[in-house]
Length: 430
Image (tube, rainbow, N blue to C red):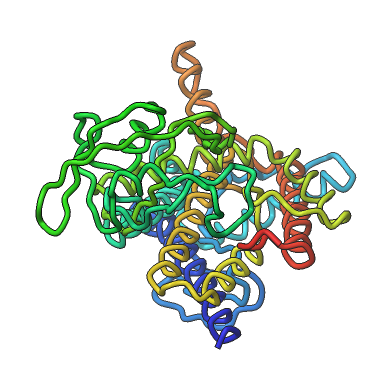
């Protein structure tokens, strides 16, 4: 059954990724058609075509590998009639790009070419894809946070420790001579719901913990709800060494008040805006990864060849995401917990697609936006000087840079594929 569950988890991610790509390309296709651009193809996936059908002027299809997609539009670049006089590999690449671009304009009304559109329409078309991924991410995270709910510690007591053990102790049971825990001595019981501590009403277990940690050696009044009745008790936390995690996730050992309480964990639905907040926080994390990509890729390569454990927050390929999804599906956790992780993974993938496609380099969407903005800048400058409107930017000159970006993307993909196969990030960390 574990193998079947693993396969199901992988398939869920593959289908989810394909849907994300399909919606991304729809984000380009719909405004392109709305603005009259001739769209020859709409393809989801890369590699060999496994299904296609022509409807009107557009061929819709699915390719074998769900790792990309494209919408073919007539005249993505302004045509350049004269052939390049330079020679060499780069000159050949530039000329080939010009010839390929010219082919998309054959038999097409020039007014339906992409490059003929006003700058704002070109930007809308190119941002339509990333925007769809952003919307899908918000939807997925909203389902996770506001629909399914997040596991949180409640004010209901799940367990009360019998004794206080030294921080360095590895014993699983209380030993003779271990003092009773403050919670046990105070008469707190599992199932009690904390109402107030030291005169302060508490709505979360974190608030209760903060009061306890700040009150070592002090007798503080505690009010709990037990079997529908209000019970007043007195709790005196002891001073103990405990590991405390700060907002950045760093764990330090501190001397704090300790009572010996464990909170019940329940799923609690968050406000409707929590999904958008989670999307923003994930985008910030992805931007940080992209900004540090060379360093992170180097670390990944070192870990791959040395066998060291990889950074769980490092970059992943599609293989890595699928593998994690399979491991999640194969765990013995409650089904809702597994679904939550899968939804979170797909939400994070869409955020990554959104951020990555905004990088202002061809062939990414951000590169086409940058060219459109450059055209707008040239036209604005010409109007200020009273000069004639300049010709559209010759983006084919950037083909060598585009090729370099493609090679880098392929290299990054190959490295991450290898790392995710031979030295994967695992849920257990091992």
